[in-house]
Every structure is written in C-alpha cells, then in structure tokens.
Length: 153
Image (cartoon, rainbow, N blue to C red; front, side, top):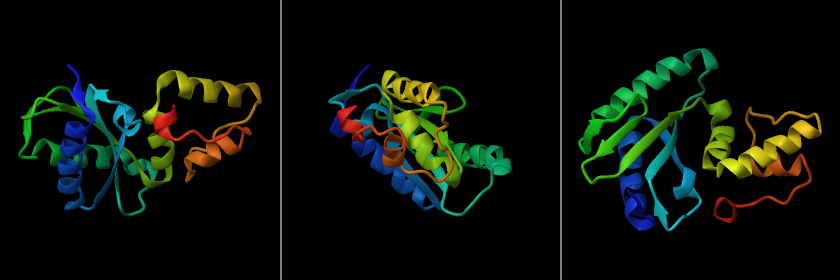
C-alpha cells in the first residue's frame, strides 16, 4: 500500500517529536527523503545526541526500539525494526551511532541502484567511502561527481 508524501511527513514529524523527548536525533530517509509523491513506509535513521562508540550500538538499538514500541500511535510490531502505526503506515527504525549517522543516512536514502553505482565507482578507483563523520557532499566530491540532492536521485 502506498501513502502520500504529506501524510507520511506528518507521521514522521510526530514520531520525531516523540523520540526527541528522549534525547534522540532523527532524520527521515528512503523514498520519503527523496520526496517521492507516494511512499510505502517511513524510514527513520535514529541516533542519540551524545557521542557513542560502536560497542554500544546494540544497546542503543535495543533502547530506541523499546521506546518506539511504547509510542502511543503504534498498532503492532511487524518485525524487529518495523512498526505499524494506527494510521496504517509503517515505520522502519534504523538505529545508528553518531560517527556513522551521515553515511547511513546517505546509504539508506537510496535509491538502491544509485547507491550501488556510487559504491562501484569507489571500488573501480580502489578507494573507500569514508563512513566515519562524513557529509553526503563529500562522498560525491571524493570521486569528482556532482552532488545529487536526495530528490534528484
């Protein structure tokens, strides 16, 4: 089932506001970040506002998913990372630590073919994408490609 962009953004902003009360930073990702007219779900990358190391990712993951499961608008849990809202749309939570947040945001924004293309260019040039503390524009600059905003991908 597909949902309109505006409807999905309203649902995203509600869950974002809820998670911010617990000290989390959220960014919408996937087709909603690419501003598609119709989306299947709401993908959200979530991190704690404080610096956390990789060893604590599982703890953060468990904690944020537990908090999401208590959100009053949850109808049911679909799987470990996905929840169905009472409004009918599902949310997909992608927990991340600060140092990988921007990379995960770029990677999960997609679309998959675009991400694969960029990763293949890196591979062909025998360089690695800096996943730590990077910004999206840098991912493109490092391979001399014009940065594409999410809605252009």
